[in-house]
Length: 302
Image (cartoon, rainbow, N blue to C red; front, side, top):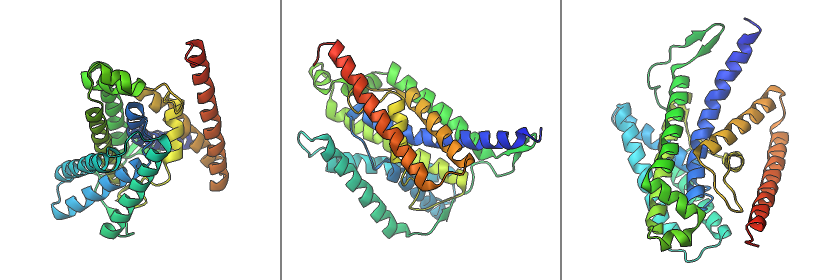
């Protein structure tokens, strides 16, 4: 049993970290799948949700109140961002939308630095921190919270996109915005709802991550975009056309979590990790463009 104890501990940590990546990837993928916008501000929304929850908790020490207040505030920030930064742009190109979201990320982080500074802040765990022993390995209650909530979120979002009219409308907008508009779908309203949903999910993720690690600062959610993009592409989202679903993003996250775990086990340096991740991204994007081109050629679209 002692031989398998480190493996079991690595497995628990890997699953928990993968669940955290999955929650961030869900928000990232939902926006892209519904609007074809690559939202580089999603990580900053996660950070904003965590810091808002911490501030509310310090004012009124109630986790449910902090949770609800942060979710509402960040959802409103997502609404304002879509209305003021994205909606006024007429016939935007993908690069323009990317620049806007990058600018939004910089703005949110700058405001957060003014309000909270660079210090780390704490948030208590949801249900204590007494470890649970599984043989020679241990698991914290927060591990169970992260894994359980991620599973519920994935199932709920998959059902939402497959079974509800709003979810189907979001998918229709992703496949063909013009056709969706012709059949009566309010495309602008769908985009607003999409940004609000993803901001809500980002706040939810930030609070959960902060409660899991115990602390948070303005660097939470930074530099995750490349790995999340790879996860979404592996899961079926396509930069060149064709969209994936929620479960697909989860599959991509599992793959990237395994890659990062192998990096850590082999003690590969961070610079080599970035190089390898960059190579994987270039390969996935090239493969994606090739497959989409083949599909369009088979359908006679080119």
